[in-house]
Length: 331
Image 1: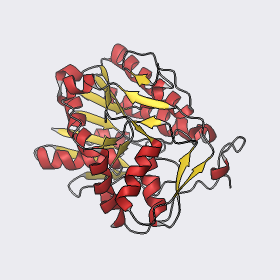
Image 2: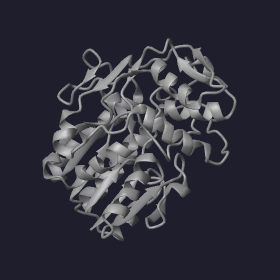
Image 3: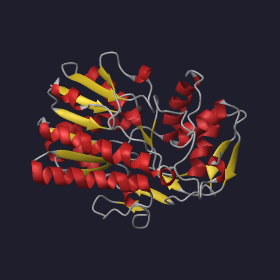
Image 4: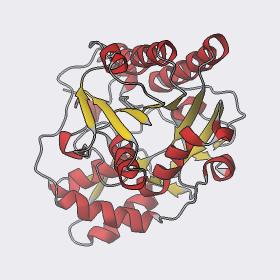
């Protein structure tokens, strides 16, 4: 058996590759990443690695030289708040890239495509609770792009017989996360700020609520989304079940750091106020279990973060649109 993981240098991709290599050593893992948001040292040396961009490079070469049973398409730039100011990049990186992956999955008879979408497709949801039966109504270009990908994949299933599973993970964190990106992954942003003598930023009043998901809890369910027959042509929320306000999550991290942990409030952003998914479907079909508390997961990630090299922070040199940009991102 052979699998392809796009975004293999990122948090989800590298963690799944490690899990497969450790638990399913008979399976060959091939990975694609352009290293724009992930790091080569994240990639397990047993992965057959292709460095390429899904939009610009001939990814068909990877399919013609391999016969993939399953394709995990994780590659994306998940910066919801920034997406209104980088629209073209957002749609290229998410929608166009996914279309190219879908084309090759159809052409080369992949058994199942596993696509990681996002809770951003729900928008505000219904009372802040996100259930897979709800009709999505995203409020930012990132959510729009991901929802368009979902619909295209479902059409590919109807018209071309492509089997698929769509996973909507949420606020995943843990070792191997990119903590050097200024625009995404709030827990990683806080750790970077703390290690570089900056106060941790909280947007708005901090009463927004999220359910954070430790990578250790979702890796095996991600694998199950490929091999579980009941996951065929299903859309499934996947991740943590505990509701945390941003203020309380920040307090957890400050308690772990203990000394010198400062924070400050910044202007609010255009974002969903409350984002709490249902999780019963992931338990029933994928065997998901919420095992890791936020305190445990953040403690482990903080220890890992302190061992990382002192990388330059990623900052966009310019935006496609400056009008309306938040003060904390202005050039």
